Image 1 (cartoon, helix red, strand yellow):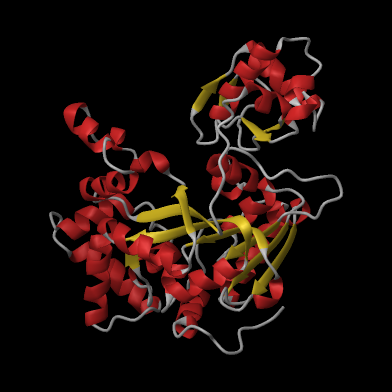
Image 2 (cartoon, rainbow, N blue to C red):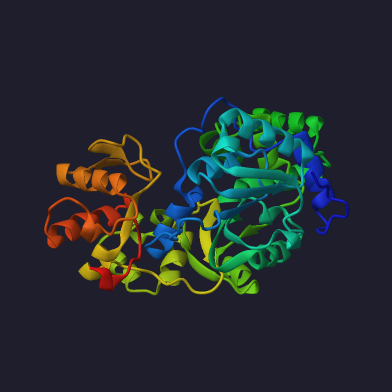
Length: 407
């Protein structure tokens, strides 16, 4: 295990000491796989959502290389291991205390048996010797650097051409009450230790019941903050940066990366908040202006989660039958209840499949790496393409391009 000898970000010593005291996130350890799934941590799902297809791996090819940059107590690493079996995963963090928890988590969950996991005490700024990765996950790390732009550039340099980077950053509008509490505590010199934790919790007990800051905490954050480590991370953190959309896109541009899209796109859909004439007017605007409208209308958005890529991403729409029938398919790993007709989909929403769709998916499972048009079903091509297109649209069936000439 390596150590962080010379911090390359000014905030590193104080942030690492903070997380040694309060290892975050505070999700409990358990024996066996983590609950459910988060599709953003499945490389196949991330590529399918962003590009319409998965990265096709040939027999004997190298395993996927995944970086979990700022892994904390290993919650994200655990999901990455279980959702990407056989992958090579490097998980790094600057807190030795958090990494102790991460190692125990992966051992108890069986994550180490699912993937080749390496957990290291390293800064995400110091990974030049690790080569490049097919996928990078960095949730809640860059905004704790004194210079987040340097962190983004460092991660960009670790991406393979065309590879995806998934980020999670704070949004300032939805954290206004958190920022006020942070500034208040800082003005009084309340520290980031156990005494600071006691005083911060005391504040919410003595504020009047009708106080907006107390109400907002109780209504929005109290459940998340039951664990002391989560409360401390929210209100006592010594270094953080929040963004609005304008600064977010400037941040992305600083590393010469492409913005692929939000990983919670429904939040940014005007249909969620508008209807009638106002919705029509909003939908007539360019995409980014639509997002800016949502930012103005929903002050509860407390974070941005999104995908970036190194170079533009080509996207497949699967509208051509020949192209579709030449593709190979695989089932999403993010399904609950398979095999069966009544499932939970990749967003944990109810999904009902037809008998024919189940039969098609079972044929795909039974004959992997077989072009859809060559499946031993005895169906006509129109029937297969119609069923497959609907399953792909709902992210149940993940596709890899094939050789059109073969069909």
